[in-house]
Image 1 (spheres, rainbow, N blue to C red):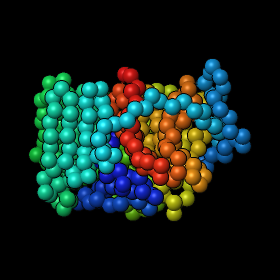
Image 2: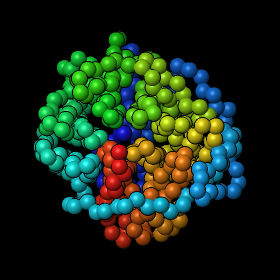
Image 3: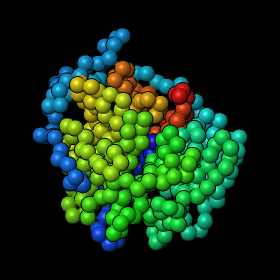
Image 4: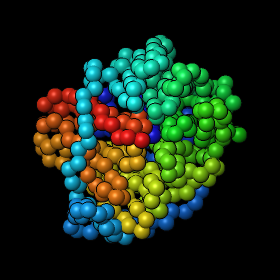
Length: 388
C-alpha cells in the first residue's frame, strides 16, 4: 500500500497534485515534477499495440457470478453496481488525515504533527525543517516519513512495530540509505523506498522490517526515474519515466533487479498500476493536458475489462480488492470510491454527500480503509473494516 500525505484541502482540489519523482542522471539525483508527463525505463519492450477499443455497451456483473471479460483490444465495459462498505465516522477534525488499522489510528495534522494512537501510543511533533511526506500503517508496522523542507538532506523514516511499541529509524546513514523524497510503500512488513546506488544511480531499496535487513534492487538507467510504488500480496509495481522525454510513462512489474512493463498498457500513457492475484489493474491518461483525469482497466486471467474514468494517483490495494476514486460525472453528482475484484466485478463502495465533492486517495491500514470527502453538503472522514 502507498500513502502520500497531504492536507485534505490540497488532496481534494480541482486537480490531483502530480507525483514527485527523482531521476538517475549518472551523477546527481534530483526531484522533478511528473505533473505533465513521465517516461518509461527502456529495460524491456511494451507489448501494447495501441489504445484498446472498448465494447459499446456497459454491462454490470451478472448475478451470482464474475463478469465475463473481453480482449485486450476490446475489453468488456463494466457498469458499476452499488455495494457500499460499512462506513462509520472518524472522530476529530476532517483536516487531520487519519488512517485506521485495527485498534490503531495514525493521524497527521495540517501543521505537520503526527500521532500514533493505540496500545502503544506515540507522538511525533514535526521539526521546523521537516514535513511529513508519507504516513503508512499495515496492521503490524507504522512508518512515518519526514522530508527535509529544503530538499537537501535524505528523508528519515520513523518505524514502529505495533505489537511491541519498539521503534527504529531509517535515514541517510542506514546500510541502504534513504534519499531526499521519492516514493514509499508498505505492505506485509516490507517497506520500499528510493535510494542511490553505484554511480549515484537512482535505485529501489526494500526493507524487511522484522529483521531490519535492507536490499538494493533495480536501478533506473541514466536519466530515468520512478515513482508510484505499489506493494501487494501479488507483487510490486512502479511507474517509470524518462527525464529526457517526460511525456512517456510505463507501468512496470518490479522483481528484484528487473522491471517488466504491464501487458497491454498503451505506450507512454500509464499512470497507476498494481498487481492482483489473477492479473493487474492500471490507469492511462487519455489527454495529457488533463493529467488528473485517468481511465482505468483491469485484467483477470484471460479476461480484459474497462473500469471507466477515475482520478489519477488514487489507485490502492486493500483487503484483496483494488480501489480508485471517480470524480462527479455530472453537475451536482457525487464523487465515488470504486472497488474492483475479479469475483465481484466493479462496484461503488462509497458515494459522497450531495453537491460538488472531492475525495482523497483512499488510505489502507491493512484491515480497514479510510477516506476523506469534501462536499458542499458537508465534509466527512469515514472508515470501514475489511477483515484480513
